Image (cartoon, rainbow, N blue to C red; front, side, top):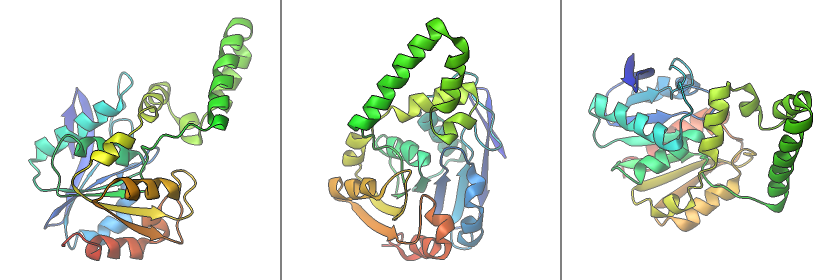
Length: 246
């Protein structure tokens, strides 16, 4: 199924009956990443999913999106379906959208799964950033060939695989630091986190727990960045009995 956001076709799906859970996917994947857990959870809840613009079955933005654009896209879906009293289950990049959304609009509960949004700039990271910018400037003047090689080699695998528009979108999105928004969340908050996550490390989960009095942390000790895949049964059980009905 599709709805339209800013002249873009955006894919969504609704299955099951009961209280509403809305799943938000991470960068580089789509809502289909949740298929296995949704297949079981649909027996207990109404499940709503969305492919953000630029992912899965949705159209790619014609100009780069910001985090605010994705929040507005998500809001448009909520209004299109007239959803009330929702619980959001948000993984990685989806967590960025959810944190921003929940600072503006009411939700019943937020479940952050290895969420992105905490930006830390170590000396090593700063060195890499400024080195890249310096080389980019030098190569732009003296060697276009080396400039293209630098762009190809730089960035994460998600960045390298992305189109030009989505590369620019990713750059805009990851610059946003959501530490303040995390502290200001006033909804019920569950944190699901893979202990061995190297993308969004466990210290990010501990930061959220420390700085938000509403937060409850559940650690998946045999998981990396995708606990809903690595420990599917525990994830499903945590959704059903981990505080949703408290």
